[in-house]
Length: 197
Image (cartoon, rainbow, N blue to C red; front, top):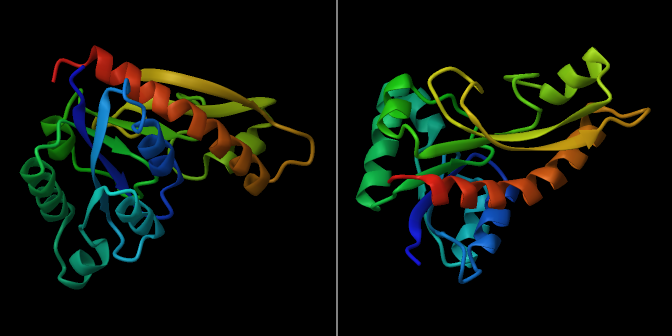
C-alpha cells in the first residue's frame, strides 16, 4: 500500500495531531505523517511531534506581525516548506489562522480541517458558545475539505455530541474534542483513499 506524505498544521497543544500520528502507526493506514508545522514558535504540539519522530517546522505568525508582513507572505513561506518536504496532503488541526484563497487553491482537494460543530451550523469562532446560545440539543464535529470560504467545504465525516443540561462552552468543548479524536483519523483515511493526488 502506498502511504501519502501528510503534513499537520497546528497552533497549540495539537491533541488532534496526536490522534493522527497515533493512527498512522498502523501498517495499513494510508498516511505517513511526515511533517508538523506550527504557526506559534512555542506550541506544545511541536515537542510531541519531535518525540514521535515526526519532522517539525515553524512559520511564526508573531514574526510576520513584527515584520509587518501580510498573510500572503506567511502562506507563501508555508507553501514552500510543504513543497520542499514533498507533502502530498495537509490536515489542519487547531491551526488558528485563516489561509489565503491563493494558498487554498494550490492545495485544493488535498487540504482538510476539523471544526467543532455539525457544519453548516456554527461556522467560525466560538462554535460551542454559538451552539449553547442557539439552544440546540445536539452538536458535534465535522471534518471537511478546505475551500476559500470559511468552514464551507464538502463534508467528509461528522460525529454528533449531545448538549447536556448545565453545559458550559468549556464542558461541551471537552466532550466534542473527544469525538474529534475518534473522527479525524478515519476521515483522513477516507479522504486519502478517495484522493487523486
